[in-house]
Image (tube, rainbow, N blue to C red; front, side, top):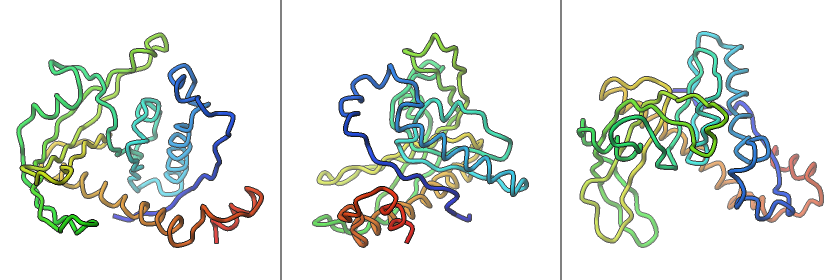
Length: 228
């Protein structure tokens, strides 16, 4: 599975925006940092025009769990895969997404080697795998906008019997790519695991290049430094 960089965005937070988080539900997405995910999706859609026979999947972490992104129009061949951040409402008897997925049977148990981290020793973790389709409902505070429901597939991995002194491994993925079999569910987890490369890149920029310590006086100079 090729993993590539199609576009990047550079911006700085405006000091005057401090406190905006408290009123974020009243703001349109164009005035939120979440807009970056729509820009990223636009870049993927543009790339699709250049390679019309290739499936492109935009992968996002929990910050990408934004309803506008999930509901955004996409051409055929462009899909989404992101990690869920919020226990949103869905259609069905369990009403919420986590309860809906956890009501599904475990279809497989995956073995994951967890490397040593600080004082925590390396260990082998057993992960229970579940998946199911879900219909995501629009946010309640935006009912007047007439937003559509969104059909997605949810894939969850959850550590079984974790040690008492560690945080259990758990992740709930949402994707627009159909997941009908155990093999497809495992593949979606493997796709998301590819995202770790971007975290390594961020660590290199912050720790290796110490980019946050650069005092270059202007955003233009900092952007050139980032590029180099």
